[in-house]
Amino acid sequence: MIKNYFIGLCIVILASCSATNDDNIQNFGESKNLDLSTESFRGDVGVTIDDELPSNGIYFLRTASQNPIYGFYSSHTNKHLYSHFSIANMLPRTQPGEYYYFLERFLGSASGKGKEITAWFNVNNEDLLLTTTPEELDGQNGWRKDDDLGKSYNGDEPGSFPIYRYYRQKTSSHFYTRDRNELGDGKFGFVYEGIAFYLKNETTEQELRQVHDGLLMKDKTTGYLYIIIEGRIRILETMEVANRVFGVKDGNYYPEVNIDELIGPRGKIVNAGAKLIEDTRTGKIYFLDNGLLRYIPDPKTLRVYMLNEKAIEKINGVVGFTGPDLTVKFPYVK
Image 1 (cartoon, rainbow, N blue to C red):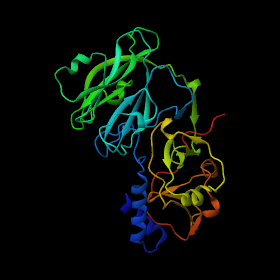
Image 2: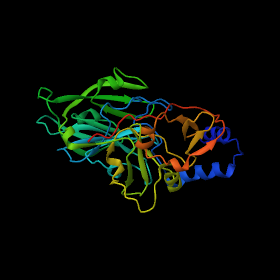
Image 3: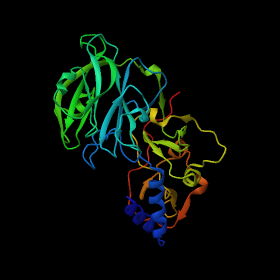
C-alpha cells in the first residue's frame, strides 16, 4: 500500500520522494493503531465478501431495540464476534491490548418465546458460538459461557427470520447472517451448518438516522475525524490532510458520534498524501487517493465532499495510476 502510494505520487508530481516521509506515514498508522482500513467483511486475505454497499446506506443507531444482537469484525484476528452490547470493548478476549473489532451489523432482536440463545467463548482459539443447544459443546475443551442474549422466535411469527450459521476451520471462527445469499451453501472457507435460531428486526428505519456522503464526524472517544466517501466510513489520518483537502479548521463544529455505532462498511484511510490536482492541459481535477488519481467529474461532487478548491495544485500534464471516478452514492436526503 505505502509502496504503491509513493510510486503514484512520484509520477504525479514528477519530483523526488523521501523515504523519511514513507516511514512517517507508516509509523503514524502504527502508533495510532488505526483499524479501519478494511471493508466491512473479509474472508481470506484479499477477498471481500460483501464488496457491494448496502442499498440503504450507512445508519447510526438512534434507539436500542430489545435484546439486540450485534455483529463485530476484526481484520486483525480475521474473526467475527457477537454481543448484545454495541461497543467493542465489551467483547470477550483472552489477552489485553487492542483487537481492532468494529461494529459491522445489527443481526436482530432476541425477544421471542422460544429457546434461550447463549453465547459461548473458546479461550483456546477465541471463537464465539451462538446456540440454543449448549449441550452440543459437551466433551469439548476451552468453552466457557459468555452471556445470555435473549430468546429465539419459533420462526412462524410475522416478521421473524432465520439466522444462518457457518464455520471456517482455517480461522476457527463462526459467522452468523440473516442473508442466506451472503455465503449461500458456503464459500471462502466457510461451511454452512444450518439455521441457528430466529430473530426479528425490531429496530425499524424510522429509528435509524441515515448518514450521507460528505458527512464529517468526530469520534467522541478518540477525537479522530471521519468522513463518509461513497458510502464508506473513512478516517482522516492527520489534521493537516483534513485541513488541506477538506478545509477543516480548528474551532469548526462537526457532529460527535461513537464511531463504533455506525453500521456500514469501512474504507481505506485518507492518508497524509491525499491532495487535489488540476491538469492545466485538460482542466480536469483529480483527487489523489492512496496513490490513485480519481477524476472529479462535476462541481456537485466537489461540493458534496467539501473539497478545498483553494488547495488545488496545478500541474501541466498529470500522469499516474488512475482509479475510479469519485462519485456520490448516498446524497443527503431531507
